Image (cartoon, rainbow, N blue to C red; front, side, top):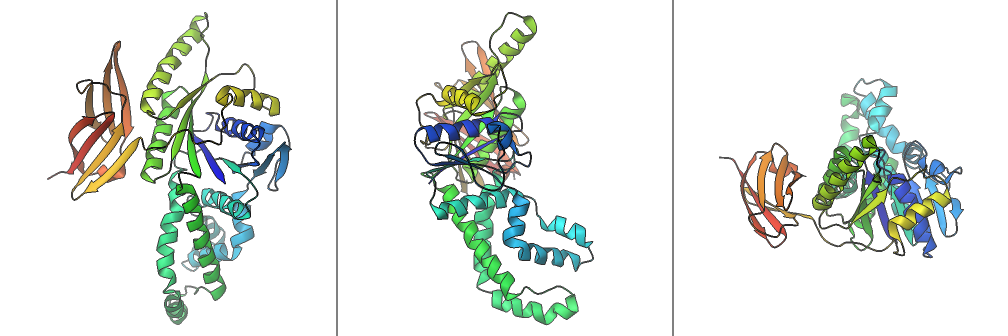
Length: 391
């Protein structure tokens, strides 16, 4: 099964990109499923038909599914959620609030993605396209399953011991001990999380595609998503710059078009060496199968959206003793063509070109906190930047 994840800041057009890609995959003969967990029920709007939490056939070779992550968790893990809530409630937290707290940050995204694991097990579809929630933090939860899975699997070997101790101290501490049913549910959940992590980290199976508009806010959001994906070992194979205004004579719109043109050039350098697809601002709302097909044709032409458009890592990371080496793919041609400077959690790389200079602001990983920028060296199209702990 091929898995394609679309992410981007809200309003960039990632839902339209997801739906158009799914339609195009179906056009190429792939049995395709488009999934969304957006509470706004965006798939119904995009396809102009009612799509809910049951698989709906929307076109030849194409089904759609609108997930309600809270309902998904309630249906499959009500016992676990109730137990977590009882833990908080036992500490004096109001029961209603305890249930809200039990839905930990990222849980809704996590349970939305567990649907992917379920569908993968069924083997019904060739391609699954996921329209991710509009959050710059969404990619963090893609690695969360692997982290939780690894930790819990080690602890599971001691569940009998912990369960016994919990029951001994339950009357004293007033903390409910997990039942054997709860432990079984947790173990099964951990296994599902690990399978999901393996799917997402398999570069031959999964790709993330970044969707941005030609403006600073959404491009910065997409750059952070790219950094996160590389940190977590997830393949990103494309960036899409969407809603580019055409050149017109009227001064107000001409100024906007000129501004966007500069941002597109900047984005191509920022996302290097990823392929960057550029999509115009359409003259009408992109709603319904016909408009989505038009969009998909401009986005992919005769190409199959299910193919992997790029293999590689625009960012690389290596920890050595008290230092941290960061590798950035850069479209430089000469060693003297750039200046580099650090400002807090960002790295500013100024690239000289024929008409002046282009500034690329690279978000830094948390591992560089407390470290100083030591040196930078260009090797081919890769900039090696060394950070060392401040003495």
